Image (cartoon, rainbow, N blue to C red; front, side, top):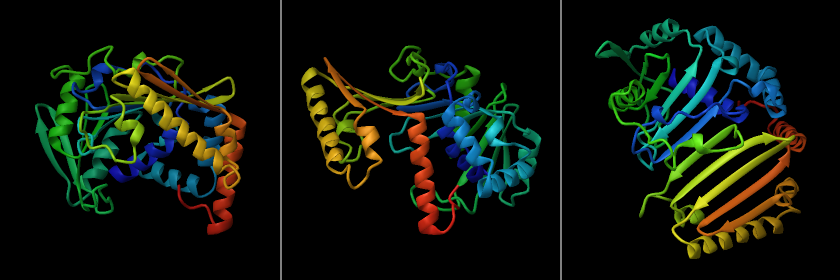
Length: 318
């Protein structure tokens, strides 16, 4: 079941619209990364209308209708918000909080039908667990056990261990420390109503890939995307330790931009993005902004879909 829920959420993340206020008190203290999206007004935006149209036609529509028939829940319409966070840079302790109009009893009944289903109690809260034989863990492990419960406010909590789920439950219920308001990972501090926002607190000597040079040079990173004035705008803010480091990050970003410009002829779709990219460095902060008209982005997405159909014979990856 977890595999299907996560698949639906990943698809829907692309159509989130103006975000409702982020609640720092729902995220555990000590979180190293967090992402948040609100889905309620997605269908009122141009990009949202396009993606929803794609999800209500053809193979995608068939799969969502099958999902709805099984779970009595339609991810395209019933999800309100999604929060994902973790305290481990490797992502091994990630927690997903899903606010949606669930048929709770139907989900529990379906989970109980799994031969590997177990239930434990934490106070008066049921902790559900099962093994999804089709779910392949990101680290290569298979047949991983999933854990889930419902908070008193109806939030579904998903995690890879009962301890993680119980800790997340305690944070929501107020019995364990939560993220401090105003901290670097408090996404409510973001302005301009981004429809998707994520932040990363980069640890010293952390497990960051060597090729992620601009991340390794930063102490925290914030990424947001919003639709404004018929423009799809992405903003990456990199906060460094000092002005000297910021200038190095600035040089790296502009070098990557120059490399992209060299390949415009090979990939014409890059033109719209590279022509509307701005880099601003002030003190110890580097801000990278890129904009593209929503109509142009939809045009590029349609072209990508058609190209896939032409080369693969069908669109079957949703």
